[in-house]
Image (cartoon, rainbow, N blue to C red; front, side, top):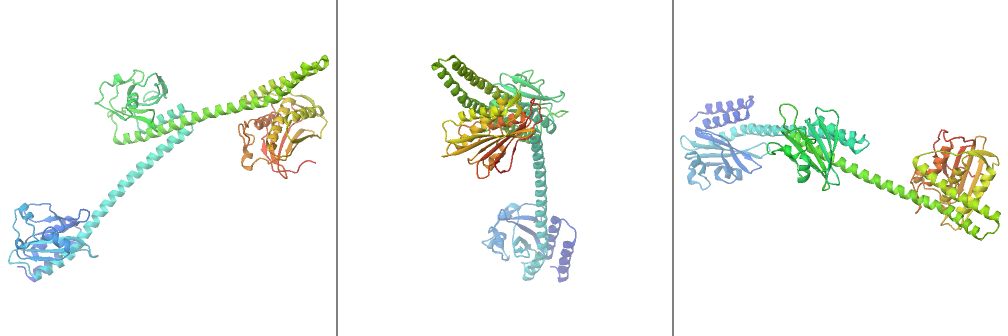
Length: 594
């Protein structure tokens, strides 16, 4: 049995070890060796608490062999101490019902006396159980219990530090893993952003696919990169870039063949390797110029629709295979390609539908505008059948021909508008005679309506312009006014023809509801309509085109007191359509002319 001085020396040795820079496992082993020596025991075991699994496990076992032992809470004397938090000192373990002899059986050992104590941290949380076995003389005393309690209070510092160190290492590893994942994610976002930017800068689908292929070639180098697009007739269009060939080739195939065709057929990714035999049989010579040793092929599917497939084949260099990271990037890119294809197809379909709708509106507008001259011409023909005087018949025939010429000219105007042409047939025009033609036109436009209309001629001079086109523009504005006033019990529409030495100013004023502010910026855009069931959106667009062809402008402003005011300003002497255009605008309200 050790003397008091010897025991104090052991405690001092443990204290010095705690302040030394020792590995945690080494420190705990040293402490347990000193516990065995101080208590004059055969061996000592330290069980650490595993909170996640709710059990104890042996950190250090003394003897000739090392064993890992796990003990459940409540199992054996150590488990009972862990469960109750109370110490136990047994003179003969086999006489205690709490004792579990399975460890003795495993280790080939015979436990007699046992001293077992809980170990708490400074917050009172159980962190370990210490077990000292077989005192070499007699059994463990009260002094032994006190000494063990003192030593384990010091050991608790090492155990807590070990747990903190383990937690710190785990957290550092988790942080490192998170940083790596974040870096990968940022790289993926940068890649997708670069592709989105490059695709957005392209004008059509082929250019977009080519941009994606070139980006793939940089990100995942390969000997051959392909994007196959499925066609409606069961074929495919292949965009292909070979590493040693400049540019992207576009090939058309009547059937879906090769590795891309195989991936599309099975609707599943395909990893090219030794398991795929006779790859040449899967591909056309033109599609696959070499026998690939490795590759990744991914179908492009959006909303269960098969759009095509993406393939990268053979890494350049000695190692032709692709890594898991390559597979992840290819999968990421395939999703981007699929989304690009889907969006481009939707845009193309929408554009086709818009064109058809615009064409339908244009035809509807033309047919609608044809009604007036056709009605007038029909009336003249009916009068001719009843007129016997040759002179009157000749006048009616001339008027009929004039209306037919109007129809012809209207057709030319629509075609010219569609082509963006600004061809003018200018001539010297008496504004007095022109005002009379405008009155006839307004009479036809407002026939059968309650609208009171008036033409104010404030300039009785001469001007050079395309009288027919200007009259057609005025007719479009008048029809808009009729539409705006059609549901009102009364309405007024005034046309004012005025001028300066340089300009001819045509002003149109109605007392309707005017144009909503939110729509005014689109007023002169082609196919833009507001509140008109049969509107085509071409009338004011053509007005703008005619005004600008005359070197002038078309503008709109709200009429003071309510209503709409349109104004056409054109050069008084227009000799060609080459005059510099001025922007058509929306103007603030101005006082009406007296």
